[in-house]
Length: 346
Image 1: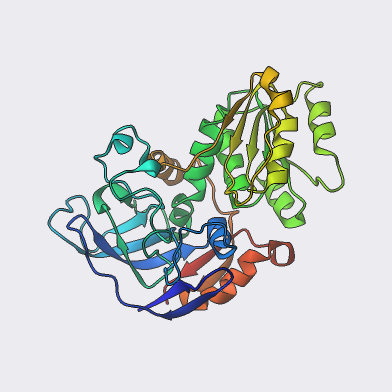
Image 2 (image 1 turned 45 degrees about the horizontal axis):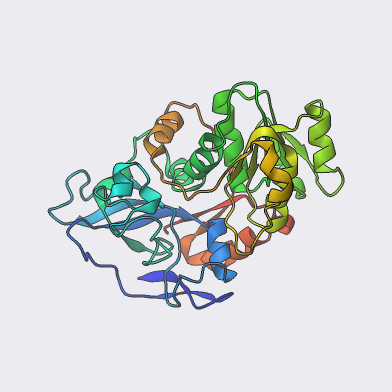
């Protein structure tokens, strides 16, 4: 088969690789029908995730069809159309029993496209298929479902739930990429009073506005002054970091009110400064996290009943064989206006 292979920082190639095979009796093999590219994949190519070995097939977001299982897999069978979660869960370890699947000690967690070959390929091995795939209802399309592999549960769990968004809150999101946009639509489930998004890219601010947020260019308007003016000098109740660079994390600390929450969603490759000399007295709650995907069934239900609209996210479509060009488009949103790109089997 063909897959997208990582060959070290900045190097990738769509090339022939061995077909995946079942290694454990709890595995399934899927034919990848649809996938996408994540900002985390760009972080890997930028050298920010050194655990990824050269020769690894990338990708952790896909919808596919089960083509093979073993006897230990009982909840899915060949022919099922499934969402392959970005997080694999053994279901047995201490963390899985606590619903913290991202911290799985039994061989799961974020392994696809990270520690084992991923799903930017024609076929993929999915560990712990019973607890790491979700059979999709007929009224959820592949295009919709692939948004549930990572960005929606990540924004919902690591941003909205960790940030404890409540009705009437002022919510600030720094970064209007796919994660930031997903944070807008999932935060709105809790009817905040206002959502403010900061991003310098015109296309991303436009998308944020279409989703119901107030979008501000931080290069022309001072973020602190904007938030102070909107809140009568208090600051935001909840601030979400959705970029993954030190500067964006540090500005979040200046935007939150005393007693507020800062939820870091972004993937960071460099140290950020935490100014405890001024923050210790402000009663802040600061959270970080890797998604657990425990809310995926809820999000599938909301998508199926029309309570979530993800149509804004997909801006470009490619065949899987054209993935190199898809990466170029996705990696340069300031020129292309890309949000999420869809990769489909041909």
